[in-house]
Amino acid sequence: MVVGIDTELASLAIDNDPVNQPDQPVFEVKEISGKGKGLIARCDILQGARILCEKPLLIAHPMPLFSLEQHLAARLKELSKESQRQFLTLHNNFPGKFPFSHTFKSNALPCGPGSSTGGVYPTICRINHSCIPNSHNNWDSKSGQETIYAIKPIKTGEEITIPYNNGGTREVRQASLKQSFDFDCGCPGCSRSPSAIRESDVRRKMIQKLDDAIGDPSRMQGRPADSLKDCQSLLEVLEEEFDGFAGVLVARLYYDAFQISIAHGDQARASAFARRSYESRVICEGEDSPETQRMKLLALKPATHSSAGAFSQKWKTAITMVPKDLGGAAFQEWLWQRVSQHSCTLSDTDEDSNSSDEEADY
Ligand SMILES: C[S@@+](CC[C@H](N)C(=O)[O-])C[C@H]1O[C@@H](n2cnc3c(N)ncnc32)[C@H](O)[C@@H]1O
Image (cartoon, rainbow, N blue to C red):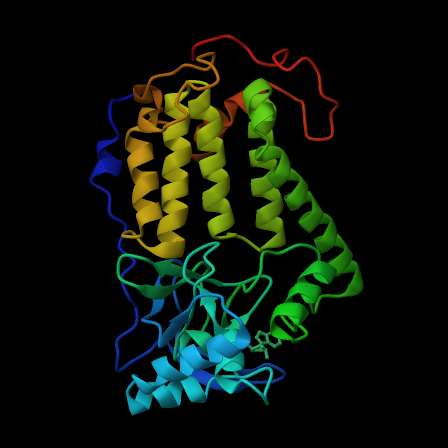
């Protein structure tokens, strides 16, 4: 059975409001062996719960060290005594000359993905890095705040962690953390046995390879079924490497699957992929984040996307064709149907770009 517009989604607003009361934080700041201070959960925290939300003490754009020192000194004077104390007691990896700049650099988080503007926060900057993080940090441009959401269930006593870098093999991650923050990562991912690290490195390389292939527009145009297959494979590798939900990486891959589908006219699957991206974003950033809301809108109206039908209409479906009565496994089968019809994988050689794609309406 198929039904019309997804009224369930239209009225859906997933509630993951703060678990955190000002007088009862769900974490405590503690000394952690080999890492300085860190945040430890004081109770079990549910996946998708908002752990913390803070305004920056200071923000700064990239500038030479000397100018940054002057800029920070001036801004610091404008802060309350308590905020000054909070900044001055943050970790400094490079003590000595330029204390304000080096404290800033040891702690700053980008104000949004890819932003060169950085911000420092009294408590969020106590959160240590993990290559297999259990939390996600996100800049909310509307409220001008950084938020931290639990992307996995966190047990009482467990450390709350976020990723400081973009991944890669252990060697690549260690080198980038050393260069940017001057520390040797001691997270669970980096402390695995040599054989487990080798296996992890193979997965990390596969993640990179699949990501590159998915982002290739000519492949998306000429061999969309293979691009979708790569999305499905990426999902599996991410789950294995990240011990379950891989956070925003999953939201992004569903958005890629959305784009592949909608560019070939498949509104039904595009809507279903956007919905999954929306649900993943809610876990990572909450219901009200702009990206979450964008995914929700695309799930409801996939044809409004700028690349709708841009490559072809050969997979054309109407949004009303999303099956409503299929259970988990059967829905999965329907969702990735175009993948299972085509056995080609990343390792296969390139063939005639359209040879594996059918001209059929579903
Ligand atoms: C933003 S601060 C985090 C809070 C810091 N631990 C503190 O005491 O305030 C970043 C610093 O914490 C330490 N750190 C963070 N993650 C770590 C990890 N995975 N392994 C070892 N040290 C880590 C490093 O010294 C790093 O430069």
